[in-house]
Length: 458
Image 1 (cartoon, rainbow, N blue to C red):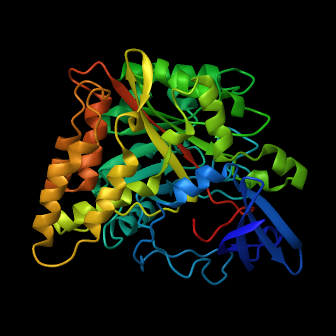
Image 2 (cartoon, helix red, strand yellow):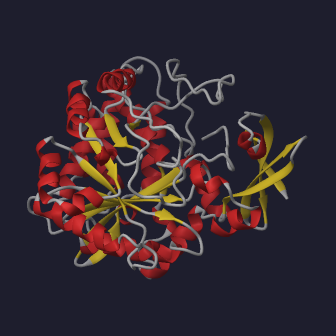
């Protein structure tokens, strides 16, 4: 056993008793796997899997970035002193819970939606205040919002909520839904499109009725959204011994429906909400970690997509910091801990998946960006700009890159108008290529914080 890092966690049993009890914790390596260990004087020791692949852990942790203090973000649970002493990650995507009502009773629901003795449903004025708080966050307000619940389509004033989000300045508005309402009515989907919803996050747990009892409704929702040219991200909750075997097939389903499906966002089960009442054996039997998901995807695509193609979200921070040095304007920091999740972008070229890592040398590019960030002295902006524009194309294998892919132009756009615009423009152009036969979508694996597995780095 080898201790790799010290951190803080909480006791899960104290949490069940509605108390926050901070504990010292160790991140350790044992038998090629990474674990988090902690001990409560009252409830004993706890050990949870962190990464099932030490090599993946070591590679992702190279890109750990610590952001600046975000003073106006607060976390308070059970009226205890703040869970975190400080926040160092800006809000990239604001999740706005508009109701706890739901027309389903999924046993794994981390929001425990529809199962409480009260209805949580803020008024429009209250929601406007909450949204404005996210927009006022410094040094840069949140620009993307996901309207969620419960099931947000149960609110008859949902379209008013969408309009308010646009009014307060969110440039990207998503809705997270189980899709039942969308499956029933193409007219409802058209209303969402008319309100300029950018993305529908659609629950999608598998490609068979056994793994996904809502498969028929999911497909009907996708067909209705296809008719109105909607954009969909599939959101599977992965559970071991239930549907993890479908992970690769879900990616393939997305590829087969790439005209309407623009991404897959895997969410390994989070043991909170209704999933808290589990024995240790039940919890360990259902738990899913990153390398397990990647293994299934690798098998489905015979190595055409592999774990080496996935990088933690924090790598974007290096890009943002360089752009900030060039534009002299605050950029959105992607400083989430690498343990929070990772992603890759996949093109389709000549009918085969082509991860972006197969034609961009990500490691070399990040090393170059890091060198630029460290530059000091006179004419810093000019020196960084010159090196950036001059060298950015050297990291591209143009022979293997899809037709029409112009990384240098994206880099120039970022230098002129900012990283978030450039990334959004990159998504738009590649999702809707005017001449290129290649199409692309992101595949993301994210881990939500849970009361069983809490690491203060997340």
